[in-house]
Length: 249
Image (cartoon, rainbow, N blue to C red; front, side, top):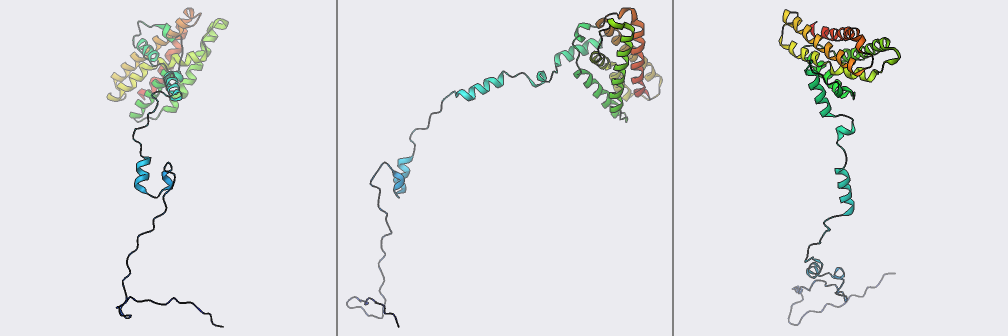
């Protein structure tokens, strides 16, 4: 059964030919209805009016001091420096280094507070100068320093007996700081021929320098050290002569 469609009749203007199509007049675009509430501009599709109504005429004023941020900044400023938190006192290291440089006037009070920051710097510098000379001795240096500290600790406590108050930590600190003359020797040896008379003489001078400083500090900082000064100096001489062998050979 065929469906029937109702087709509206085509009406032509009077006086126009049905064979010539007529141009349709353009109609106005769709205009949505405006909102009845003017306080809600986002319901209106008028872009200009919405932008004008939502624009800020005055910039927002922020508070000059926020309690949380200000408190955090103040707490951050009150924090101690990183080196101080790590226990590294650069001023103390500098003063101890100056005291080692003068073997005739040694301030033993500076070395009462033992530390390992300065000795570690000296040992790394010693290893670096040896590396520039073509010798990789970082592991040997650290191992020998540890063994030398144990050697000095055992020797002194055997001599002092129960009255000895020299601990392992202070031995390691003293031997490390007194390595400064040997570090200077390793730096000078870079400009001198190996096995010459000059390097041998300088080695003897710097070993005696390090021995004198280390022995005097041990005697001044430990009890019952005066009566065993010679034996302590001999032990220190063996330690620094051993390290000087790394420079000479």
